[in-house]
Image 1 (cartoon, rainbow, N blue to C red):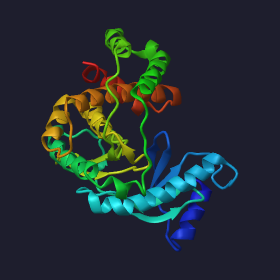
Image 2 (image 1 turned 90 degrees about the horizontal axis):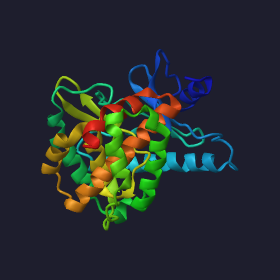
Image 3 (image 1 turned 135 degrees about the horizontal axis):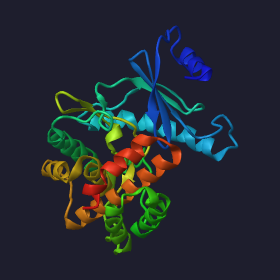
Image 4 (image 1 turned 120 degrees about the vertical axis):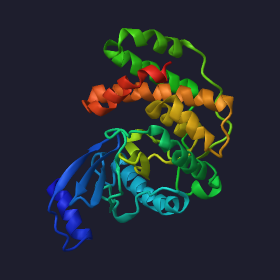
Length: 293
């Protein structure tokens, strides 16, 4: 943790003694620290946040403020715990909250992943049936033609093909050569980044204890949330999740979910290899088999 971050804590939590700091990890947008085993301090990775003339800095301030407001609403919707900010510093792109129980699923696999299906189905049902007119005050629309996503996936594959096991290349290349599914007709409120790194679990009980990182929450295709369940937890947990899901998910929704899962997997592998953040690349490689089955 930097001296600047310590000064932020002094400013917002006067008298709070920092005894221990642990870097929890980072994604494409944020880096997170754990303080004293009880607070999580999450900071955006955009450059020059204090420069009002800097477009990324302005976007960062707006994003942090929007996410803080969103979390207040999401805490009413979600049947599982979500972060509740104890302070927000828009200039620094920082959001702080009390640590939620559990550990990130991507680093701490549970013994019985099928037990996550019911709470995930309930969680996604609550999100995807929330009134869009209410949620769009806090979440932007995020939808792109699936043809554009396929083009991006082709680029990611070119970047990583030398690292992909030969046995998987044919299946990936068949996917990239196929027609894309029809674009979605209905959008809902979505977490929009429901990878296993954002699911907190009680490892011994195989229980879902929280959902974190709502930076990318949006009015989007609900199939994308389900796609990341498919990618990270596999087809069996995905099907079990659908058994508890109250939203609409027909055959075309399933087709889009598999499509998104494959595109997202290629993106994660490329990101992990490019940045050296190995958990993304390693998890992507481990999930190639079932995602492109």
